[in-house]
Image (cartoon, rainbow, N blue to C red; front, top):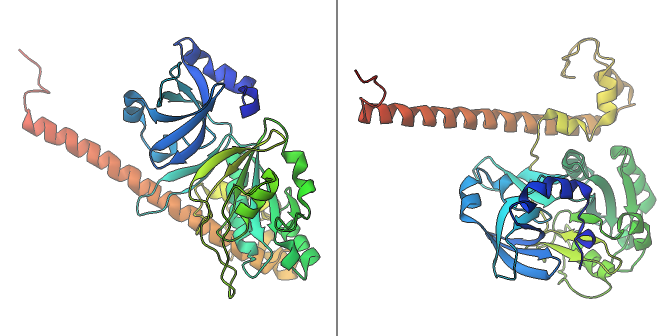
Length: 357
């Protein structure tokens, strides 16, 4: 197993120079399960854990090693391997982490392509596809929309055309992982040393697709509810898997919800036609709500911009704005807590800040 077969390239080599002078060696995170990791290097796979110094320096969940990350580890066959540093990422698919805390979660790192998998069954949802596309364009990877379960769709061509309209710049493919139909069309992205992340909600058939691409039954597959085609997780952790042709597949559990992590510009990446129309608005700060001379509203009025497309953009923009508001509040709270601690320390040690005579 070579580093190149794991996705190593000149960019990673350049950023690793400082770590090589310390006698460290590169490895790639292949699995993440809570606080435990498995890394791959030229000698194979082994468990890994963070060095105490790095654990102390990590300031947020997003800085924690994620599947796909390249890391610097201590040399030797010791188990577990000790992760001393995380290399800068070339791409990262990020969402807002579940729970009450406002923080980012890196779902997949250093991927070249993101396969956004959606089912062509009763769970088909174009608005959800738009949401995934917004996160994918922001990630820095190339999005490809994979419409799975094509064997269940009576109006396949119409569905493909609909998704192509809301995914300008992205390739849209209809496949049936169960029947093996259309999988050859995925080959241009599944090249040796290239990394593809598989993302989508529960029940879209990602595990079946993984099995089909591997050519063997590796992942358990689950049934979906008949009334809405929604499924349960059959993949329970994120993992990097080598495909027979040499590509690397980053498999992820189905997401019950994808909360965006990004600003309003990140949302715009999935709506290029609205961005283009906005250039003709009378006011540069037009919000496309009720302003006079709004080219976006004019396009919605004459039907050249679908109303549901505009409403989806507005919804995601509101979500991004709300996230920014919460982040600002969190930053203010952290700053207030810092100064509160400083003032308390000064009260407890009143002479600490005085000049000695």
